[in-house]
Image (cartoon, rainbow, N blue to C red; front, top):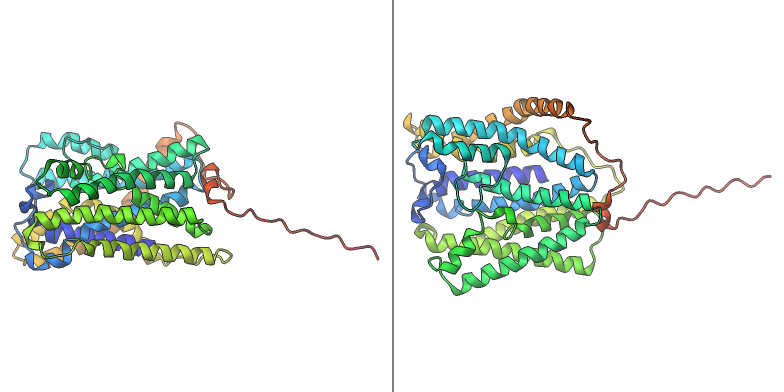
Amino acid sequence: MLDPLRFAAALGVAIFHQMFWSWAWTSIGVPGFERTVAADVLYPSAAPFTWFGWVGVEIFFVISGFVIANSASTSSPGAFLLGRALRLYPAVWVCATATLLVLLLFGSGPASELIVPYIHAMLMVPKGVTGQWLDEVYWTLAAETAFYGLVFCAMLTRKITLRHLAFGLTIYSAMFNAAALLVASCTTPSDLPYLVILMFRVPCAAFLLSHGCFFALGIWLFISANRQLTALEQLAIAVTCLSGAAEIYFFASFFLESIPAIADQSALVPIMVWAAAVFLIARAANRSRRSADIAPAEAPAYLRTLGLITYPLYLTHNVIGSAIIRALVDAGLDATSALWIALGLLVLVCWFICAKIEPAVRCALMQTLSHFGQLPKRQPARRPALARGLRLPLPVAARVTAPSPS
């Protein structure tokens, strides 16, 4: 369930950037790097169906909370950190380098401006409030790495559990999103308080202020996949859902008020799309708990492949996808055909990256790390301290009665 959902979310973000943001950004005046390589193509008739594709990021974060909770619950701190590094860095190194080359070949800005953003991307270091991203999609990695770091630190304490993390992120993020919603209801996008709150959404993603609720929801859904939730935990889920809906509503309202082409659309649309995705994850979690005594069926290979393609597709669709569309349009194709051909080519390229290049880079990275000491191994089936918040029932040993002598 998670792999096709993750792929659909990435595809939604790609379509949003290429069919909506590629031309609608002029209404706001905040272009990204892809503007330096994009073709001059417009898709205004598709706006009602593409403007909310950015909500795929919020879906990513919920899935990340679920997946990372599962990984952390069966790993030592060292194994968890190594697993995250081996999963994230190979694709980033390949995709960031490809993005840099495209910007150097087709971009119009000076090459010197790309050096620091490229280093930030390769190290997955947030750029802070000022500065530029190598590609604007990399802001989500700042939120992801902040969440991974939070989980890793919790694992080191051996006292903070998944349940503690979920409660903390629920309260922390809900307070900020409640304030953002209050500001949105009392101001307009041209007012300073509104702009200050909006500023924290992307540049300060590493603080998990607006997006922490999505990771918290993923943890709660993972816990619900392992046991029945208490009344307090069910209340926490309701709070995270309301907090997530508030964050989505705030950003959607900003879009609707700032971009005339979608002024007649409803901010409830992206909320409904996100809620549908959360429902699917929750349903899969509930099904997993009900079939706990049954060995899980192996997911089809093609679905797993879709999940693996998602990460490089997300990292390459913006700048590299724009460059492909530009080349196809310059060759005489119409804008719509160029878009779908570009996405198809990117899927093939990303399959090659995840199937061939990433494993080779990962193997080289593991060999390099092994020279500095023994690599940490995954823990046995016994769950470490971080998972105690699950309160899973302990297995009961069968009592064997010795046969009475006859």
